[in-house]
Each structure stands twice: as structure tokens, then as C-alpha cells.
Image (cartoon, rainbow, N blue to C red; front, side, top):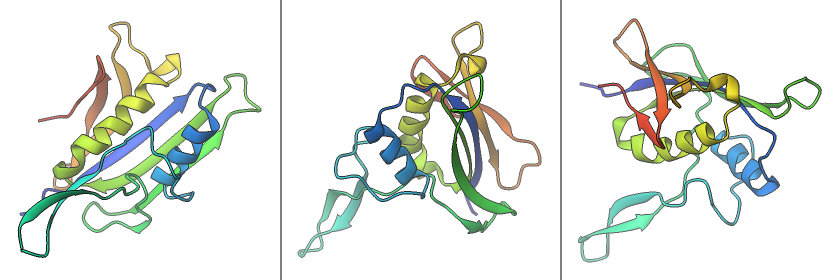
Length: 158
């Protein structure tokens, strides 16, 4: 059994993102190099075996939305893009990403989604403070669930 989900993010961000944050966001999207210092998602714990075959936790930074090309389970293409809105009335950035993810990655991806939600343009805000950030679909499901951030937490569909 495969626990693969389709993650679709479509969000407009305000124009207050710093250059270092923009560089890190580009890295997460697979369109830029890894910055020296990570500030959006700072920990990427993985369990590995040491020389004595004992499990240890190491930090292994990896871009979270960098999948490209043909999808493995959900069909279609995996991609990410970030476009400037400098020449539009609502300044900032437009971000779109379609990825295949596993529940083991929900924590790190959730941190990134919360960061995005905190910078989302007000058009993504509902009256109750919830931010619509995209959609999540189990690979065998036909209809996606709305993916929202509320009070700094991702409401992952059950």
C-alpha cells in the first residue's frame, strides 16, 4: 500500500519577503541553490545508522517542493514556479507547486506552508483567520481536500 498524496499549492504572497527568504524559497521550489543559512524550515531530522549500527538522528536539509517531471503515482507532472507580481496592481509573488508527498514529510512541509500562510495576500484569508493554501489528495481519491492553515497549524485532512 502506498501513502502518496498529491499536494497542490497556489498562493499569492505579499511583497515583504527578504532576499535571503526569497533565496531559500527558490531552493525549496528546486529553482535555486541551497542557501548557507536556513530560516524558513530549519531542521530536517533523519534517522541513520552510525558505525556501530546504532540509530542516530542527523540533519539532512532537502528542498521540500522541488519535484520535477512525470509524477510517480498521481499522474501528470510535478513542478514548482514562483513569479513576481511587480508589474501588477497587487505586488508580491505568485507561487504554484504540484508535488507528490508522503505523510512522513507533513511536519517539514507543514512548517513551510505555515510560513507561506503568514505571508499570504489577504485574498487568501477567510473571515475566521483561516488561510486557504491549496489542496491535498490521496493518490487513489478522485476529489482533493482543501488545505488550510489556522492559528499557525496546517489542518491536514484525515
